[in-house]
Image (cartoon, helix red, strand yellow):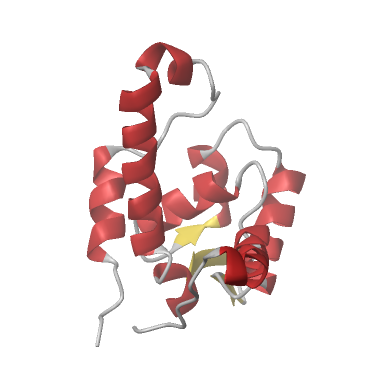
Length: 146
């Protein structure tokens, strides 16, 4: 998938920064990366499975974060008409296209950790990073390139 490339030199820095901010804005939120890492691990997850997978997030916050990801076209929501209601979430094509971005970000996190030291990074986050299995799933879900 060949996208638009901007030369982020001083001459084009402002539009480049604005485009990156727009792209990152839809991923802002304390729980969105954790939600996406779980959704990369499988085709669909029930709401209750996501709740169990991320026990520190409240039900209200999980719903808000999922709705926001759905509004941005990153996550799809499938409601099965049954009692009790069954709601499943999965990545859209747009969401799966984040795979290479996440792998690059994980590589950068590894580089950062190696550069500034593990001691500094280890206390920086309450939530653990993705497991090697999740990294493998993300790498397998890369969209085909032309």
